[in-house]
Image 1: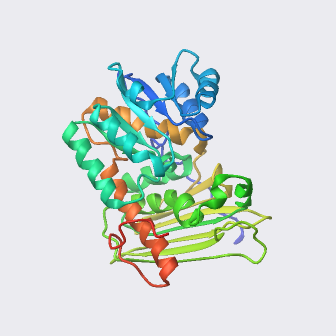
Image 2: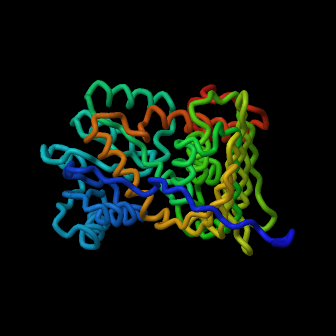
Length: 361
């Protein structure tokens, strides 16, 4: 072997990174909100063999389209209250926009339904706490659809950390360089904090998930426009998250027309992980420890496996009588970091998570 040759790869650890399904629990599920992302939800649920009994949208044609595409036997509603009145429906996936979601989540909890809320969960942390308390009072689960945790590369990294293969994780760095200008003709073009809020919500969640239950000390962030961009929200953004003994960084270049790259690096005392590819749906991961380097052949894709993973985790948690790993109380921690980042970018100063209770306009 010459000095330029790489050492042979070690066998990759077999980790349970794929979505899990409950062993026996197969409740009747309803979907409220049949917009663009709903197709990925229903595709994933069909893949998992889940029983979707009803779909609901104010636009009946949107609901009928999803019904006919994925669950022809499902009943169609335009009034979520009528849907929630059904005793046979136990779990509700609420995939509406956050501006109108809170009353629907509250009504579902009061009807004693388990809820999977689309992300971002809420626009106000105190609203989120109130809904968490209501779920506890009603004895039902309230989970948040942080589907990025089941993107194959993120999920493998998460399981590697949980298995102790990396030791004490002290660094998580996510860099995404891609062309997000496709939103120009969509409602997303009017989302002021498109990158740090709507897009980066997955990255904040993954970073905190991999770094464990450490308190965040402060967050620094910035967001600026490129010279060529035509849409309103800034397409360049970055954030640094500071802990006592660890750090995380997020970098987004969302106006990159050529040579896209999506890269994640996780550093620990016993090993590291690097995952890279042209986008989040095509990644090659390498795990390096004292025993050598391994490159697992990951199966699946973020869409639809991420949505299979979130619903599967909620159903497994209900079946096993435990709190789901994507519970809303835990999600408020990453949402507080996200709100702090948005505020930091607006105010040009570091922000302590929790000090900013609502999304800064």
